[in-house]
Amino acid sequence: MTTPSSMQAIIASQPGGPEVLSLAERPIPEPGPGEVLLRVRAAGVNRPDIMQRQGLAKPAAGVTDVLGLEVCGEVAACGPGLPPQAPGLEPGARVMALLPGGGYAPWCIARVEHCLPVPPQLGDAEAAALPEGLFTVWHNLFELGALKMGEAVLIHGAAGGIGTLAIRMACAAGARVIATAGRKERLVALREMGALEAICYRDTDFVAACRSLTEGRGVDVVLDVVGGDYVRRNLDALAFGGRHLSLSFLQGSQVSIELLTLMQKQLSLHASTMRPQPDSEKARMARAIACHVLPLVADGKVRPRLHAALPLAQAAEAHRLLESGEVFGKLVLLPEQAGRPT
Image (tube, rainbow, N blue to C red; front, top):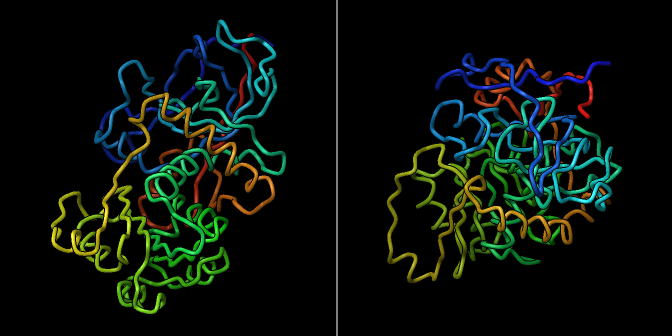
């Protein structure tokens, strides 16, 4: 078989809707120092991909225009300075990796320190659905939010990829989870994942529910993806010393809060997004995740919930699904593989 020099990858031809996503020819990238070339087996689909497609978030200087922030892949080649038999990165090894971009393709580059070994119990699609969520949930719930065993956490957007993973990670840590979702038919499944209670926010006051479920005390942590007016209501739902974590703002980034509430209840507000984090911070998180979370993945206590796996060429359909609210868990893309570069 002839070694390929190029590949078909997904880019956004211009800012816009899902229809602007298209296959484009790109050279197969070459790994630099501290990097590996991965033969992509599956790639996760995330809301930051949608923001990039819309022109609201751009890759950093020097990063490929190919979309995709997480993959499961097979090590194909190592960059200069990396031993060819580096532990866990030998040719053919399966890894899952957090990327600055480039995952919607048959081949991609990953930083060595941002790769995690794939437990053998996980399939390729499951592994590709994990990195962005593992890093995001670990950093927010357990580092910024300092969630502890026995504490109560309110997780909004619980039926999404981040939310479903957050439920399982919080439960594995011994926390009590209250989850919200927009569809009643999903509530039973959320409880089966471990949530103490699952609430349909369309017909239930989640602030009152949080107080009722905690004997009036309130929750210790809120993981929010909604923003807007939800922030004020989240603060009402928090207990004394509670921590509020903002991951996104589906209802707007402009919020109005009462500082007196923060002061009297000694609340703290945190916000983060993963993509702009320095490589050194992502490497530090990867080491912590490998130590504290991967054993839970290996024994089945923490797993992603897969909604569907689509061919790479159907990336536009994946984006339509994610924006429609129809997705329960994660979507992944499966590239058609070409020959292996040498």
